[in-house]
Amino acid sequence: VNIRIEPGICQGTGFCERIAPSVFALAGAQGPPFVRPDAAGDIERLAVEAEMACPIGAISLEENESAPPGQSGPWAVGSGKERMWRLQIGT
Amino acid sequence: LKGWTMESPMREIDDAIAQMSTVSDAPGITVTDYEDILHVLRSQDFVTMIPACGHGSQWNTLLTGDSVVTLAGDAHFARRRLLMELFKKAELLEEYEQQYLIPAFDHAIADLRSAAVCEFDLVPFVRKLLVRVVARLVGLDGLDNDHRYEEFEATMARAELGVRSKFAGDAPGLIRQALEAQARLADEYFAPAWDRRAGMVDAAARDEASDAELKNDLITLMIRHADHYEAFGSDAAFREATLLLIAAVGSTTNAICFAVWDLHQWLRAHPEDEQRRADAEFMRACFAESLRLTQTNTIHRTAMADSVLPSGLRIAAGEVALLDRPAGNASLAAAAGCPVKHDGFDPRRGRFGRVPQYGLAFGGGAHMCLGKNFAVGAPGNAGQSASRYEGVGMRIFLAIDAHRIAPDPAYVPDWDDDLPDRPTWLTLPVRFPQEATPPS
Image (cartoon, rainbow over all chains, first blue to last red; front, top):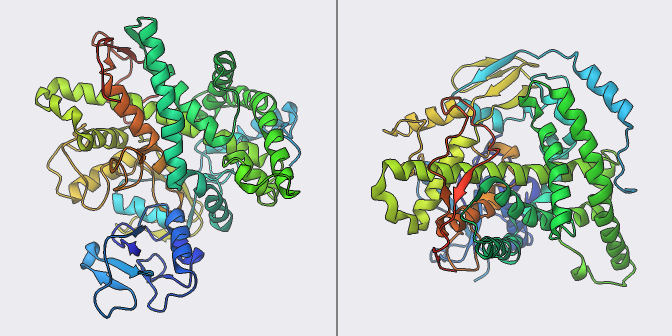
């Protein structure tokens, strides 16, 4: 399972950070959000809660991409407004 | 929470109405740029409304105060987090469509066929379908009985006029009627449903029933989180239910009627798109495009601090920002290099960059419409398999078109298409070709 964040559509409500501060953080007062490099806790449960709470739909859980070889933390895909953050949970 | 009876006697409500009618409108600053609008919607320096902010919004606090649309800050976050389960959980959204909406639609079509009806009014048809689904969401029982439904619908319509009264001239009169209707809804519909569910929650607490046996609906949710709602007074839960009921039925009915109308106006001018009605992506674009044009009423936000918007526009603390959605959508189209006239229906238009085609239809920021997924599904979710949800609004729009139900070509609506705000459909005569046999 992957957490996927789309900063390009995020509107900076900060709900994800409030629900799961051990997993998500905002870069500045209104975002964009990112997955913490040291994400901890019951990440999948917290990510599901954050996905439900996000009013915009900027967070989703997907099953379609594995982490790059050797990648243990979150990684970015794309750049600028197209950039997305991903974090693989489990296998 | 001790039942649903309105806490305030009517004379106190009359006093409150009289007092509010003396409140003059606060100064308002119209905001027309998309980025400025989004900034206001995102900012914690702007709140949804305060009772004395003017512009008519104070009327609604009597009917829907302390509901999820009026709360701000931590209270709003806590409320929204509670309610999300009903509006974003995939299995529930699927259930609303598969177990309630689709059977109700098929039943309604079968009734039309058996009675050989070739013409009918789409507005009550859609409202009845939506009430069936929303009754499940809220937790109201017995509305599949036609007689009980008709009474409920008439009462709810009066409450609905009050919630919309900020747009009307006789707001105090409408509000009073609405409060009386709301009290009747409380006594006759909510109270029995509340008592039944409270009994089930008590049984679960005594281990005489399992949590799995509890209903997953709004009333049960409010009973289970009574501490949260009691903090806002014993009527707060009822005002929340009123808001969700009216918003989910009234707004969605209007959106569907406009989508049907817009589609057929488009097809008259663009007959080459006739075949694309079988293309779900085209139909989703039609629905989104119609939503963008329909959900245009001004959003009010009160500034709690002096603010400078991205364009340089200044709004002082205490002033009201009037967020002009049509203008915001127009600036969005211009910024995206959209070559098409901004205010016309054009399903070929596509997304505005990363912004969905419906633009500001659902607002934005922390107060983005709670029912967005309920109405239009989730991005990338729809259509992947028969069991996934489209969104109730979109599903009804698709089903109507699949049965080739279309506006009566002889009907001319009595509203002015050039008005900035689209009106509420009171009637939409449609034709129903009995011979059409769409796929299941």
